Image (cartoon, rainbow, N blue to C red):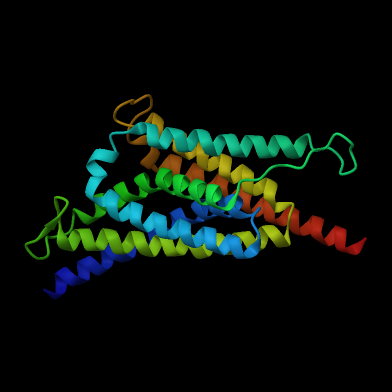
Amino acid sequence: MDPILLEYAWVLLVLIVLEGLLATDNAVVMAVMVKHLPKLQQKKALFYGLLGAFVFRFTALFMITFLVKFWEIQAIGAIYLLFISGKNIYDKVTHKPEGHPNKKPKKQSGFWMTVLKVELADIAFALDSMLAAVALAVTLPELGNFHIGGINGGQFAVMLLGGMIGLVMIRFAAKQFVVMLEKYPTLETAAFLIVGWVGVKLVVLTLAHPALLIIPEAFPHSTMWKMTFWVVLLILAIGGYLLAVAKSKVKANR
């Protein structure tokens, strides 16, 4: 029994690390989505987003073989992220001076609409991470003789626990990103570039979906693509942070 439990513990650790890596880009998207809300509502929006994501992921584990057939879910997520990234960067580039007579205040989403957007973004992110979790969990020996949603109970528990820990990591990472965006406002441009890059990631996943196969199905999981994605993400994140800190220092010295 001990070797089996050790194997389960190892797979759970791998799942937590995987979710932690995925939490980085997901958290930036969440932070950008809730940033316009008052501080108290930011926390509530992230909490409700976490609660809804918990319910969705728990339910989706029963329906994963059904949900993955719909490439449209990730396609909609990709289009939405690319849209908000492009629109916000365009707005910044064409931004009118504060005193411009024709300038109209930008209308922001309300609290519950923001929560809904956070939920929809998580649904788009969830499928890829859940598929990875299923692929890892089914390699484990069955533990017990009960099944949930066609998956062994022990394997199901590992997937659920790994996913829930990942969601908590996303929640707290998003909170830290919100703090950084408030401290360094110019970092917001880099954040929206990252949002757009995550949208590209979802485009790649959509194009490689078995129902489309516009690009090879294995490409999104290839070492080349993963390295490209993370290198570009790190360049955007580190470059944006250094530029924001430099601008902040220049502003403080004036």
